[in-house]
Length: 171
Image 1 (cartoon, helix red, strand yellow):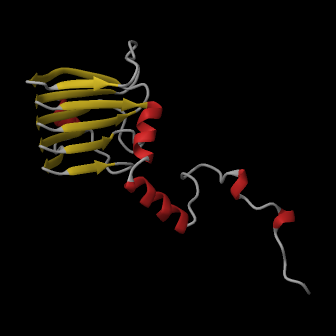
Image 2 (cartoon, rainbow, N blue to C red):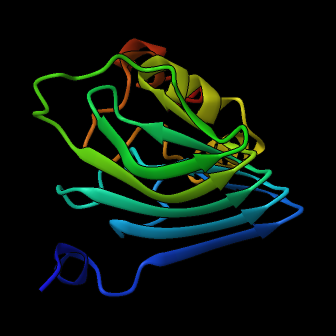
Image 3 (spheres, rainbow, N blue to C red):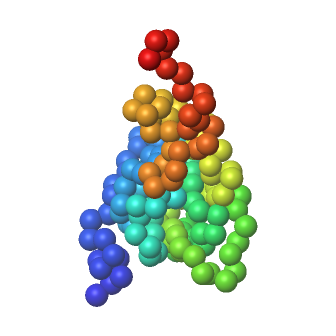
């Protein structure tokens, strides 16, 4: 039995044809993905804590396309099974983790005249923050009164002090 069948029998399919797509934030819990792109640009955020701990597998079929992967700072990228033809390549802006103690992201498939850009740590955060999707999510959270992430205390500068709370005159 292959590990891919045990890990996730139905991979998430991402298809882009002459388009630009962004999958940011907590958008999935899957660990297997099939990405098909023709003359397109995809951004895929794999930093979500909702994705279970284990290897993540991406089966890529790119033709004159670019895929940007946003990963954790200590992620290990394994692109041994990725074939690049023409100008197909993998660019990493992250430091390699030689110990291999963190999550491994396996890239397989084919890149024809395209590229896979791997961004981690602060660069990945900045890339996510500089998007319309992040801004829309931040506005929604602010409107709902969710100024922090779940499980974290409200920041001190957003918590009113007792001397700052004014009561109407005459009470």
